[in-house]
Amino acid sequence: MLSRFHTLYLEATRNCNFSCENCSAGSGKNKWKTADELSFDEIANRILVPGFKLGTRYIEFSGGEFLLREDAFDLLAKADEIGYRIGIASNGTTLNDKTIRKLKSVLGDNILISLGINSFIDAENKKSRSLETDKVLKLIEKLEKEYIRMNICITMGRHTADDFEETLKQVRKLQLPYNRIPFVPRNSMAAHRMFDKEILKTKFHPFLRKYFHGYVSYVPFFLPEEIYRKWSGQSQHESLVPTNPSVGCWCGSFYSVNPEGEVAPCPLLGDHLSGGNVKNTNLEDILFHSELFRKIISRKHFGGKCGTCKFNFTCGGCRAMAFYHTGDVFGEDPTCFINDISDSELKEMEKEVSGIFRNYVRLAKFGGLYSDDFME
Image (tube, rainbow, N blue to C red):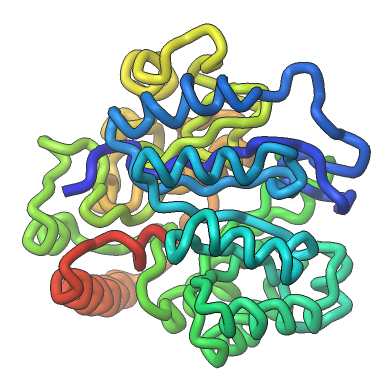
């Protein structure tokens, strides 16, 4: 059974060869090695070593463009030596033949590359990610020839809502898993790009349920706690948040560290909320003793409908949506539409989600581990 905080999203730099207008990490060109950026020793000794001891098993290196760090391959080698399963979030432009060969020589098969495609309508993807879709597709072909695992990150916002189903169809044709990322104005002024309850209900949620492709956690997640307990062995009383596998909101299952060392319960909350900085506080104290992290895993104490919802344990509401829409990370998720559907509609969705969940767990058990599929 996986421990709490089994996954780390590590933004190791803000330096990037792109300057996308609404970059969540606030990355861009000419941001090389800011004075406060974590050093190799700080990442290794303040994050990687203690994180593994605390039960973190998967790490995704990101940025900025992580591979622009001069010590990127040293960090990857260190993480691999410790025993982490490793992923890299990349815009793809640094993954040339030489880099791919070096990644294989350092990590072997212990690597997953996360690539972003917001829309398969090329104009929108280039506008929101500064990269043509065709270039991403060519990179996917190259990585497949090298037998490197991949997943696709898709941002969910008003600007991608109309294309969302078609994008998921295309990802399914590629036979790749995907990960949805709600758009938030973490480091931009584009709050108008966030989706609302109606858009989530009509444009995103139906297709999240339909095109789950392997297993994808999303919010709202209408999985009855008794079904989860039956197949996972976990209950809210014992575990507080679900980790076997993680479902719904992943706060409590994962955490993030920004380039300056601030630790947040979600990458989308980085730069706004922190349980402490690894430069001056032990990682264990931040994750298990800081007020922010102790409260974020106490889902029964959330505000509004999220606190009293029957899916409080298996969903929890999106903490990022709660924060950016209301200013209260512990409040209710105002994008959830559970109160706007009939009992019969809800029961049908429960049945649908329960079936997807059972099938996923059966496959994971058959494979001997819950690891790779739901980590993606």
